[in-house]
Structures are given as C-alpha cells and as structure tokens.
Amino acid sequence: MKESDVEPGRLPPSMAAGRRKPDGQGFWRYFRMNYDLYLMCVPGLIFLIVYKFAPLLGLSLAFKDFNLFAGNNIIDSIIKSPWVGMKHFNRIFEDEAFLKVIGNTLIISLYKLVFLFPIPIIVAISLNELRIRLMKRWVQTIVYLPHFLSWVIIFGLFYSLFGSYGMINKLLEAAGGESISFFSDSSWFRSLLVFTEGWKETGWNTILFLAAMTAIDPQQHEAAVMDGAGRFKRIWHITIPGIVPVILLVLILRLGQILNAGFEQVLVMYNPAVYDVADIIQTFVYRIGLGKMDFSLSTALGLFESVVAFILVYSSNQLGKRYLGKSIW
Image 1 (cartoon, rainbow, N blue to C red):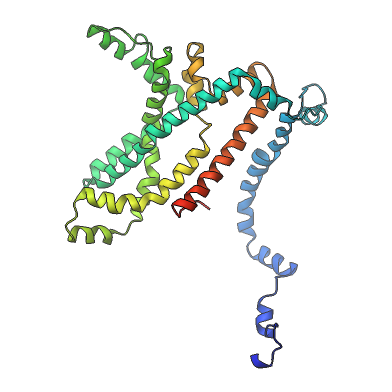
Image 2 (image 1 turned 90 degrees about the horizontal axis):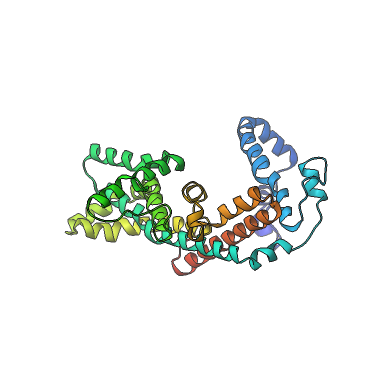
C-alpha cells in the first residue's frame, strides 16, 4: 500500500504497528530476560519503603493529640489518637521561644551560606591550578580529612584550643590580654560554629567543583594561552563560567536547607549559657520531642521545616531558570 492510498488522519499500517503499546506478555518477557536487574532494585525499594514511606504515617501526629497508651502498639496508638486539626501549628506560632529559635536558625544558616559557600569554590580553583601533582594530592588529602571526623571529636579538638584553659586563651593571657569564653559567650559562639563548620566541610565540598572543572574542554585554555590570556583571566573567563551550573545546583540545594543550621554540630557544642543565640529548630524539636515527650508538637515543627524547605528549593530553581537560564529540573 502506498502512503498516498491512506486516508487522511490515519497512519500507514507499518507506522501504526510501531506505535502500539506493549502488552502484558511483552513486559513479562522483558522481566524474565532481565530479572537480575530487577533483583538489584529490591534492596533500594526495601530501604525506601521502610525508611521513607512507612514513617509518613507518623506525620499525622502533627494533626493529632498523640497518646502513647491509646492502643496496643505504636501504630495502633497513632491511629486511635484524636484529631485536633491545626492546634499544634497554632501553638508553634504563638510561642515566643519558637520565634527566637527561627531567628537563630536563619542567622546561623545565613552566616554559613555567606561566609562558607564561596570558600570551596576558591579552594577548588586553587587546587586545579596546582601543577605539582604530588603537592596537589597531599593538599587534597589534608583538606578532605576533617570531613570524616565526627562532631564529638571535632568538639574535643576545638575545646582543647578555644576552651577556658585551652591553648588560645593561654596565649592571650601570656600576651597580657584576658581569656575569652568562646563556648559560653553569646557574642563569640556563632562565629565559632561558622569557623568549625568551614574547617570540617570545606575540603569535602570542593569535590563537586573539581569534578566540574575536569569537564571543561582543555582546548579553551590552550586557545586562551595562544591569545595571551594570563592565569587569572583564564580562571575568570573559562573556569568560573564552566562551573556556573554546578555552583547554581549547590546554591539551590543549600537554600533548600536554610532551616537546617547543623543539628549535630550545635547539639554537641552548645550549652544553656548560649541557648539564646544557638538554639535552632532541630535542637528545639529534640528537646521538646524527647525531653518533654511532646511528640505531636515536635512532628508539627518538623513538618513545618520540610514544607518551607520544599518551597525554597522550588522557588530558587524557578528563579534560576527564569533569570539565568539554568536549573536542576
């Protein structure tokens, strides 16, 4: 049959056959041929179900007055607890302590974003420009190592340096100055959080930017050298534009975590003397949920944080798409 003989609006039989959806037998035939690939997905699916989907039942606690003894087990207790609507969210926004916690979280996160976000980019560019391979590897290893230390160990290290009887205060006293209570002075504690976070994570955060630099075409640098461009001009006009998509990706993800100021770090390092400047949402939820056993309020706090994070990620992605022409989806 010629294509001219086909009625208008209809496809030739050969093309129509190619557009048919596969039937159930076709799927099971494919499954039998690739069963090993499906088996490899099973651990990941189990992980998602157990740790991601099953706990979603607990989100209902934000809208209930949870009673641990309402049922025969924890799930039965969640189901039988009475619904109270937005009661716990009203409690959150009427509590002056929570408003203070929100302020602390935003301030600490913004400090870390402003002061620490550019540093991995600068370190990655500096490492990329090193021409001595052995030195480059040594420097990379040294700056990566702190990431693998727990915050408990890091707290011990910095307390031996900045504590009341630490080396820094000993040097200040030897120089005729006064000792500083870095861990219990509200005016110094936030700076200490930012400094320790930078020391621990800067090296690890350079990995993405170094990987992005390897994708830049070396011929661009060669052409720039032929045109007489120096090292700083090549960095400004080739390296930095080449890693802009990765910078934008990391920035969008970081904005989505703006209400996450570092739970493990703050929990290990803070104390009642600096609660007024260091108590953040996660530590507040921890103290309310486990300390006062108010699981409904702590769940409402966690849900509020998650919703705000989603809005920030979506908004920053849309702004990047609109004004920079780049986005993560």
